[in-house]
Length: 229
Image 1: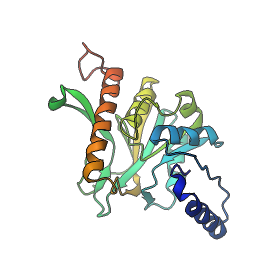
Image 2: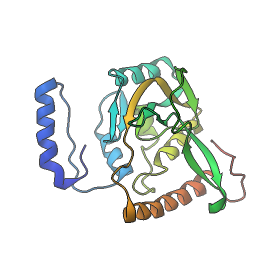
Image 3: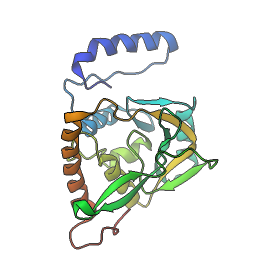
């Protein structure tokens, strides 16, 4: 799916080249505008026809060749798992994501923020599924029926922060589990194009999303740790 209209011709040529090499049929969605993370992924969800749907950022690349099949197999073995993702690595092989955790930030009045557990350390020998409070939207696999039933990503958020946490909290509110398969690895380049003034602009949007997330999941008068974490 493309939501960057000026690159349409480039992506069409790339899609034709990929099909000529691998001969695996796929559909290319060409959106008229850059709609942002949630609306773009929701367009993809509405167009999906398979039993499973994978939300995947364009800066994520596989290290485990059969990663899609493995994540689907995890969901088939574990009906209690609502959403699953892989272990994500930085280019140097250190951990970028192995599950999300929540902690309050004093400088923002105790608002709950999302952090990547184990970020920056070297991967350990532990494997298998790890149940976690939430996973990143950079790569998440779900049953399509569940994703549709939950309404996809909430478009009240802007650009790409907290939408994944919000969706994971909805999954957990259904009594289902969020998990990471540590035997499946992909690389995540993670926002290398954002810097300088653009980064300050992005921080303002993150604060807005944090406010929306806080009001929804940690309403005033309740302890920050209450509700699905």
